Image (spheres, rainbow, N blue to C red):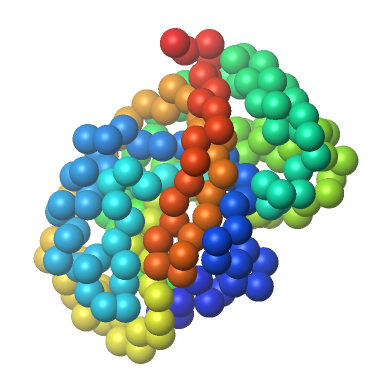
Length: 203
């Protein structure tokens, strides 16, 4: 594994807030994942994702400082109107895999979240005039439970541990998406909540 933060530093430096759109799993699911995999995620050079920061990223957009006055408000309004016509999404988080830079729980099914990703991408592009690159360019839903902060040559030990410790799939219904101003300090990802947008007019 390589450092996640080394990989993103050139396009998302520490301390800079960028606009992100997330699906946030309910607290009880985040707590189960944090506690069950604690013995693995706290191993150096891994840094665990705290339950309050677990997320399924839909889209990473541009720096908050480069959004023009009124654009974030326009995005929230336009995207909120569009998502009011979408249905809540039932998603399942599966056991973690050892990825290139993080321990990732795959999330299924993918197509409903890709529809949300497309809606976010289209509305952000409309509001900003395509000023910002849309990340990712291919969306696959997942939730990282730990990020690597340095080079880890031996992945086999992580895979061996996972072969003996796993949770059953965890299913939840996403009733809203979160628009946040997100940053990192090269160890932890945190954010400020800007808006929660209901799916299908959910309360």
